[in-house]
Image (tube, rainbow, N blue to C red; front, side):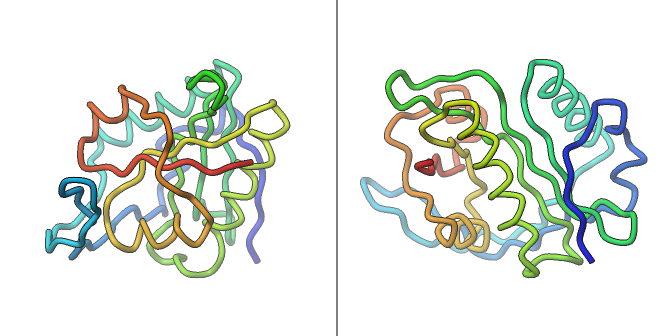
Length: 176
């Protein structure tokens, strides 16, 4: 059985991620060519190093420190997914809140955890007065299929910080 709950800053440490499997085998990615998105072969394994975990832990703690939202999914006491949403609005009239993370452990993908975490993020953002969630998404075909199934579309306003940091990511939004 999967249990979902908000996390406290004191819970976010390396031990929390002990059984979490970030690994994603990517074969094809969406790439922008002119005005069109096309699928290109770009095989690689996406995983996190210890340094990546340190950065992630710092970012999640900062999200909570600044009034944002972090929720997680647990199975048999182990972390199996998490989502985070920042508290600062941007995009003018678009009134975006930035969903900075959503990840599901490799061993639990395809079981609805991502969908449930996305729903928690939407609910929280809407309660804060957001009109849209902004998502800078991994370009892997599988990742894009998830966001498409959630109803995300290309963002009307681009967050320059995300575009510069991850030029291959697809910038999406979800209307709340």
